[in-house]
Every structure is written in C-alpha cells, then in structure tokens.
Image (cartoon, rainbow, N blue to C red):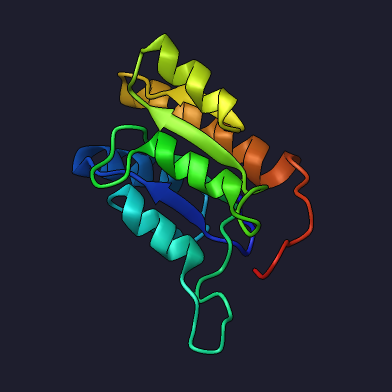
Length: 149
C-alpha cells in the first residue's frame, strides 16, 4: 500500500515509534514516515515556510497523533491543525493508549477523524495498522490540496 504522500507519526515513546514502524513495514505500507517526537515539532513540520513563503514540507496523507506528548499535547496539536487553513482538512487519527473517555470525546470534538487505542499485543497492533492503512491510504477519498501542499 502506498501513496506518494508521507505519513506523519507524532509519538514521543521510542518503543511505540519502533512498534508502529515495524507494523507499517509488516503491512507493506511503503510511504515515507516522518516521525516527530513532540507536538511543537509536529506543528513546525506542518507549518514551516521557506523564505519565499512556500510551505517547506509536503502535506502528509495522514497524521497518526498520540495524545500524551511533551511541549504541546496531542489535543492542542489537533486544535491548532483544525484552526489553520492548510491543515484543517488533514486526516488525523488519534493513536493512543489513553482509556480516558474525556480524551475520546475531546478528540472528536476537536475534529479527529478516528480514535484508535493502541492494542497491547503486537499481533493486534499489526492488524489495527493494516486496517488503518487499508482505509486511509487506499479507500478514503481526500479533498484536493488546500492552501499549498
């Protein structure tokens, strides 16, 4: 499975980054994976501009966003993405270990496209990533690029 756009993974836990990368590879998802380790770094990646005002980085196909992040937490990242013209339509899947109902409700309130709890077993996680890849990379139709790719 592949599109020409990268996948943005926003995750601070090294073990979860490794697990996600292994699961993507095992599912033959060959998109470039951009890993940012905190919310501020993710927002910088998405909104950085060159000296001539062009966006520096390509718009991801999808963002996989953890909620518990240093500097800027995942809910604030989502709030910022939805408020910015470039990223307001960017598909965002919350990928978290949080079992808090308020995190689930707040994520959807702020415009998350999906909320996935990280499964405990690697096999269950591989299947979850397979389903995510199948839907978000192959089946889902996205709006045309908005305000610069």
